[in-house]
Length: 110
Length: 114
Image 1 (cartoon, rainbow over the protein chains, first blue to last red):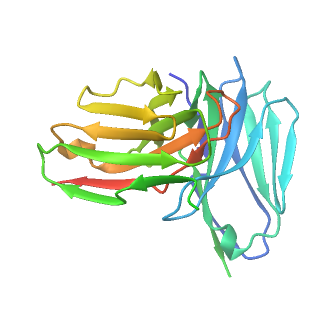
Image 2: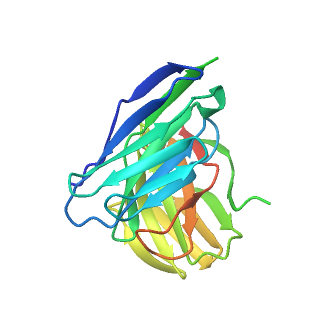
């Protein structure tokens, strides 16, 4: 059984704080790692697709790194804002499907 | 314009009934998916279709039958609904069937079986 694990499960930060969370996945037979942002009552929205060891991707204040040899990816948010409050999902691409982690729920207080 | 749309958004029904959820994408994608958000909030793949052909069927009960009349539509029909079928169901699409292809999600359908 393939497990994708995210930590922490939830995170509460103050506006302006920088934060990061982790996605762990099997390091063998790696093809792709996806990050999604999921706001309450909305659809998951794609942030990044990462395929190469050492990949770093950035979108505004959000960035991600990838280590395929050890099987983890970090998502960083610099200077968190209340509108960053959401659940952040990672997903491991395998055989034409995505295996999702349970998500990290981020709450940013003004 | 909504890229991936689902109807209905909410569905409340009695145990034993048969119901359908419709999904449409206007992105010109080849591949469509159905996911179930389980009680622990995991998104789990149920089915995928590529060019109207069933590709993935993740040990879903036979009561669930997807139908893809064309590339832009993937409907989910559920027979003899059970209490355990209560969940949020998400449709998604991607350009191709690939591990690196971004999937675009619909808004979800919250199914409640009484």
